[in-house]
Each structure stands twice: as C-alpha cells, then as structure tokens.
Length: 144
Image (cartoon, rainbow, N blue to C red; front, side, top):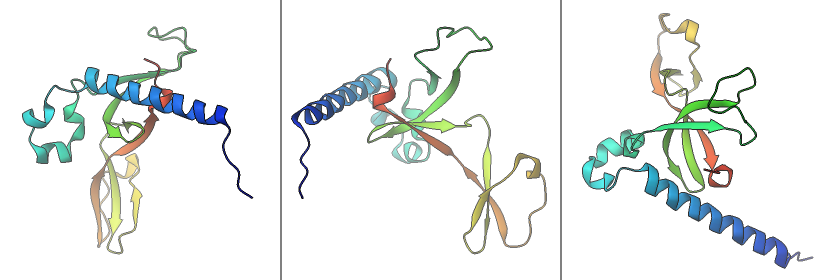
C-alpha cells in the first residue's frame, strides 16, 4: 500500500523548510565575518571553524524563560559557543571552556577522560587526544 502525504503536511513541511532557510541566511549574515574565506587561511578554518564567527558566543535560553538575562533560581539559559554550521542548523561546542581529552588505546578504542584522572600516568599503549563535544541546534529551534 502506498501512503502519500496530505496536502496540508506538504504545505507545513514546505513552510518549515523556507523558515529554516530564512533563519540560516539571517544567522550567516549576522554572525559570520564578512569574506572570512579570504581573511582566514583555509587550513586554519579547517582546524578551527569557529574562527569564522564575529563572536562565537551564543546565549541559549527557552522562550518561556521570562527572567533572561537576569540570573534567578528559575533561569534556564546558558552561554555557549558556536562551532560551525551543519546542513540543518548550528553546531554548538559543548564544554568549550574545558579542554576535554579522550584516552585511546592501540586497538583504537577510546573513552572520555574523567577530570579527576587528567594527571594520572597512562598505561603503555594508551595516549591522550583533544576532543570537542558538539551539539546540534536545528534552525527550526532558533527564534531570534
């Protein structure tokens, strides 16, 4: 049996897509350094894509949070950092202020290093690497 989407669901999907494209264009216009591809070396951008932003700082908060920007017991906002864009939104660099490390063994298995273990000597065949933990913020969740 073939199930076809209703005209209403197609119109809703189309409307959501057009809004996401509008948000994407607005964010890129407002947040990116003009002509960043000319001003910043390609290899540096490949390693540090967040350098294309005028300021990578981003405030995440719920639209229901009436206390923003005041800090109260009920505040539900936080400062985070944009890392890059992806096809459906913005990559958020979680824990950007903390240098996270992963431990990798000679089999290629890895685990995030616990903060309390950061100064411990590593067993033979295990080494530390820097990692960036990224989250996804879809354009459909961006209001302003």
